[in-house]
Length: 270
Image (cartoon, rainbow, N blue to C red; front, side, top):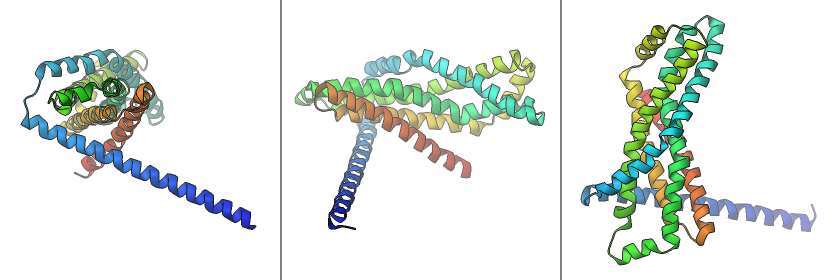
């Protein structure tokens, strides 16, 4: 190897190590910031009075306006799940277990995860864009100048609304998903309506329902805290707001999937 090639290799390795180190530092910086914001939010909920009118307003924005999108997502998910599961179960002459598979998989995994993804893409981006715009136009600095805590005024109402409404949206998505499976199983596969409903509810146990609802509870907190965090970190005008919005959605989706894997492992062993 010539001296010039050797120097180029050293420079490339150095640049790679610098980029890798910068990425690691950036990761831990944002992870720590999100954790601190979550801690401050939980502390202030119990120490300060809650602005309930703002909470109701956020519940309307986060929950009620998300109903049509959650409805379509859950309905078609239930339909596709019924078709795919029946296709495989038919090989073993076990099509009657289609309703069992749909009800359990929706309540334990697909219901909360898909609902969280829909809300993260819609609401998480909206929160980051709204707070990011307030940040770059110095409205958050104005709140501080008026002795108003931005976390109490902006984060806590969204956090409470996100946790409560994702919990309710998950129940809604589970019901709509089972309805979609019912339509395919009864009108396409020829399954008895009574058999589908009976087997679907018989297959569920309390643990299946509680598992999905606990996940939804934490997913709502993750989405709102991440959206608020990146909104507060927005810089450099409109471009910074767009960058913060993108990061909020991406990080929310990653954390939802990672926490889902963690909770699934915990509930599996306990």
